[in-house]
Image (cartoon, rainbow, N blue to C red; front, side, top):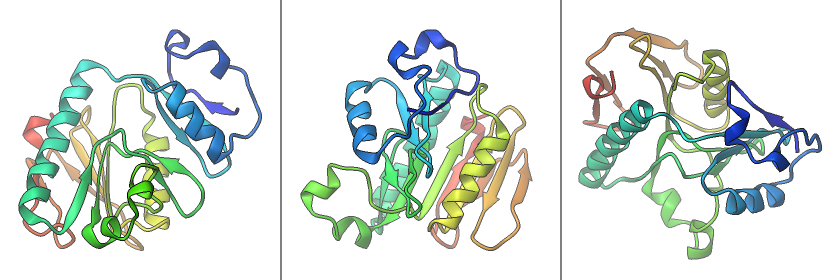
Length: 201
């Protein structure tokens, strides 16, 4: 299993995940997710395993605020379904990703069988958010956001609390960088949704 270990203390990583180099198949990946349920795992389109240990308390708190605000809006709007940072999605390029928060249109969710709903979502979410933690490399998060846009997302936010910046992504458009905003709007995809960033800084 190839792996991408970005500034992670080896103490967090089971020894059998270290130093293995073969490509991970989607079936093997699902088994690893079941076996190591306390770790966040992702799979690149080339079969590279990415291992992410639990975040620090501050990042966890910010992620909770992020998901709470998106969920509150989703329940009121009722046109889609919201997911937290443990949900996995199989992108059209074969990668399996877990955004820190995401949202899909209701019709996509309703088109799945009950069995399909128990597995990784078979598409890229319509809206994705990545929240940078102190151990994350910004360049790698930017690459991930570009991948989301290339595989079906309509809107994406990369939030960097350390710099108080939000990178706004839309397909086939230049990335917009917001400096120290108090809110960021999800219009027009998410009508009426404004994320209060003062809770994340």
